[in-house]
Amino acid sequence: MGNKSSFLWAIFALFCPFVLLSQTPQDTIAPATEEEDYSQYDNLGFADQGAKRYCSPKIFGLSPQRFVSVAWDMQLAHDARFSTIGAYDEGDNPPVAETGRVRSAGGLRLGANIPVVSRNSILWQMGANFANTAYDIRDIQRVTSDNNSVATALNERGLRTAGLNTTVFKPLGEHQFLLFQGSADLSGDYTFSDMQSLRYLRYSAAAIWGKRPHDRKQWGVGIARTYRVGEMNYIPVILFNWTSVNRKWGSEVLFPARAHMRYTVNPRQLLLAGYELEGQSYRLNTLSPNERSLEIRRGEMRARVEYQRHLFHFVWLSVQGGWRYNWSYNADYLEDGREFFRGFTGNQKYAMLNELTNPLYFNVGIHLVSP
Image (cartoon, rainbow, N blue to C red; front, side, top):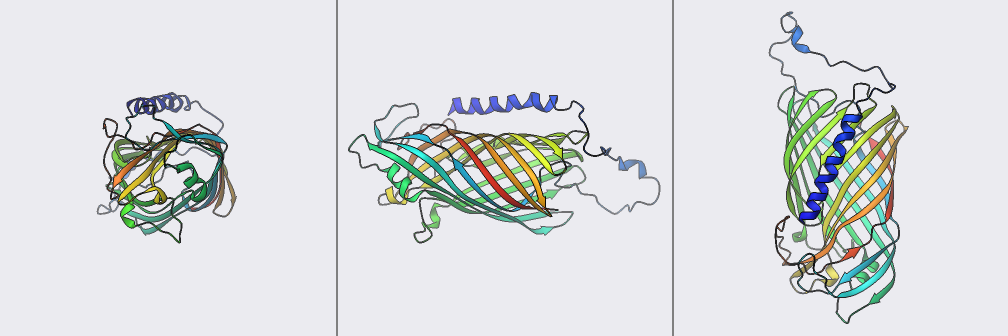
C-alpha cells in the first residue's frame, strides 16, 4: 500500500504547477468582478451593526451543482485474473483460479442531492445514489479445481451500490466554514429480489474546516473515513477550489478523492481535466459461506477529460472519457461482516489477490442543476 500512497501524492504534486501556470491572462468571458472590501463602509452609519454576515458555499466559476443526475458508465474490454481463496500478503504470487476476458463493464448511475435546510447560517442537503455494474465476461478459464467462481458470479449477477448521503455546510462567519459529509452504502452482487442484510452497510464520512478569503477561492483541511480505494481507510483531505480573475481558469480539488483543472469556454460550456478515485467494498452473497463475508475491495483511479454543456433551463449534459487504472480488486473475508482497519501499514492477509488490466472508459450524463 505504501507504493500506492506515494503514487497518489505524486499525482497531487503534478497538479500544483498547472494551478500556478493557469494564472496567465486569457480572453475574458465576462467582466471580472473585483472583490469588495466591506470594511470601508463600517463608519458611514448605514450598516446594521447587529447583522452577521456568512460566507457562501459557492465561489465564482465552479461547475454547476447537480441536484438530479442520470448517467451511463461503461468500461471497454480488459482482462481479469482471479486467485484461489487463501491467505496472502500483498505482493505474493498466489495460484490463479480463473481468468477471463471482460468485453465490457458498466451500467446505469443515478444520483440526487436535495436541499433540506437552506439558510445563510446553514445549508443541509440529503441525497441518494445508485450505480450498477454489469459484467460481460467471455472465455472464462478454470485454471485450478478450487471452488472459487468469482468470474462466473460477476458475469451472472454483476455488482451494484445503493446508498444515502448527507452534506452540511456551516459558515462560521464571513470567511470561515465547516463542511461535513456522510454516507451509508450497501454494495454487492445482490438483486432487488434478493437484498442483503443491512449489517453489510459501509459508512463513509468527512469533516473539513475551511476558509473563503474572497469570491474566487475556498480552501480547507480535514479528515475522512473512506472506501475510495476499496477497503476502509482514514486519510487527511485537502479542499482547494479556485477561479482566476478573468474567470477562464480554475481548479476543483478534494484531494485525494479527486482533482481537476477547469477551463471555461463560455458561460454555457466547461472543460475539466484530472482524476477521481472510485471504490467500495462489495459483498459476494453467492460466495460467502456461513457467517463469513467475502468482499471484493474494488478501488480504481480514473484519469479523464470531461465536457459539460448547458442544454436548456437548468439542464446540463456531461460527457467524460479517459483511462481506468485498477487500484485494487482484491478480496477479504470478514467474520460476520465485521469491518477491520488495514490502512497503509496493516499486515492483515487478503483472501484473494486479483488483477484487472486497465481499459479506456466513458460516461454520459444528463443533470438537473442548481440555479
